[in-house]
Image (cartoon, rainbow over all chains, first blue to last red; front, side):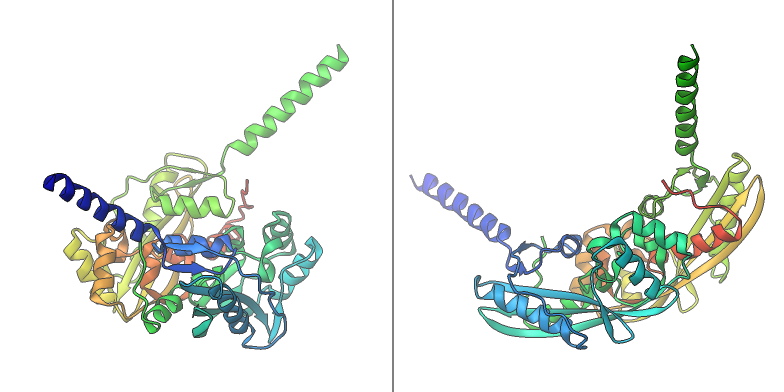
Length: 210
Length: 210
């Protein structure tokens, strides 16, 4: 009996351990497959819970932070775990460029960005149980190549621009359009890895790597 | 008969067209899966033919260009198509850091790079029929975060550093180690997209997108 009892206990121990490892301690308040993909790439164990918060839209320089904060806070009222909220905005000369509504709109945005420098700002916020723990912004400067009208049109016709702020994805075909960047590359994709890791230290959350 | 003849002709036309599109006009003289992956991402149609040229190793600032040139030239003597050769080197204070030979060596390299700026240089060369058409270098500055010894050790234990110049891959788990970059992101991965596209224009090769 003693041996059986010990075996049971030991098995329960292993099961509990497995349960702990399988339950992510971080919730990502974003439906973006690109953000999920970056978190997976750096080995995070997390769960997605999409925020119902409606993103605001203005030219406010802190807008990305405000939206990130509101998303994280909303989800943190429905779940007890640490919640990560993000919002990525593309600014050209202090004006926010949204997601294109049509192919013509995408072409118009890309023509504005062409052969110039613009700014990508991602707001990152951590909240828990309805309390904001930290909210910051990462900035990356992006320099477009001098793309020909045909190069821009080929890109628009790939339809990749259609669901993307600023009408391009640096992680896809859009790589063709970019000369160089200054800052965090993953910020341009949608989740600034270095800032997220620094903020996790700040809010005393040990990394939750798989 | 006439209709049948036309149909046959039309079918042959489609087959010829398919053959033209399926035969890549560019050869990549590199075994690197990362370079192939970038070329696929930007829609290139290409074939891999690995160069037998032995890479040289010194602290020469033009070494990446020399190696790229030699790889492209060697393959271009075996195939009539346009050949792309590349070599990526990581420099810290004018010294080339190679690929780690052991886990201890990887840790040593990462400790050198930690909390500092270093330089990634990729040489790109195009050659055809044994003639060099163009050879250039792309430079990107990379800034490492102030990673803790445990963070570096966790990364070494992932074994990701083992086949990589400078002992890290920015496109993998290594993203955790990087604060920011200045230059072409894809240069750090191994193939500077902007430079390759500019050089294709220079050598009068129209893009070969799928």
